[in-house]
Image 1 (tube, rainbow, N blue to C red):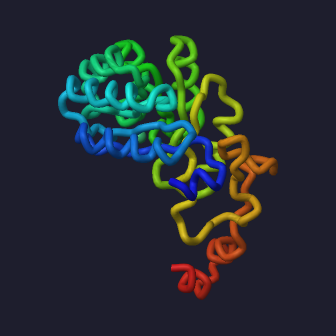
Image 2 (image 1 turned 120 degrees about the vertical axis):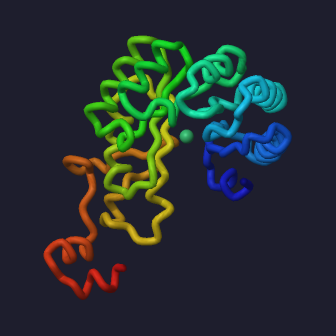
Length: 229
Ligand SMILES: [Mg+2]
């Protein structure tokens, strides 16, 4: 966390465990060292919504408004539990796993089950459906963030374009390609970090160019494929 702080990061995301004591300790330990904003993600870790509310409000009372949001506190698809937590938690609840598709997102909005939705292009079915989710969320004053699955720089670039051109998005979480040891696009066309977010490179289309070695594989150069694998 000290490294992140010293590198100038202004916001980080923490995964929660679903264990109230451990989560309070985890968030407060990080907040003691890292002065920026925090977003939380329980990944459905809290089975009991009452336990979730108590845990989240304790975190909020200790760390304060620096905690921006909590993703998916309870098991996915249980919109009653999500609404309960959303109504009683001081930390805004965002649907993620429960809002995979446009249809899912519509149900979350209709049930007033969350204050926000985490749009992922891959689970939504691409830019068209992601735009439809954004549209219905904006119409209903539901906040938006944009995340990723485990993805390369190609679709992260699509996410960066989507974030840049879509209103109502308060947080973007586009880092999946940073986990890969080999990049499949030219380094200089990897979406850069700027203003706390990933931005499109400025080139036409998604703004990326495939790496030279990948182009050679596509053209049928089997020897390069062997090296890459
Ligand atoms: Mg999530």
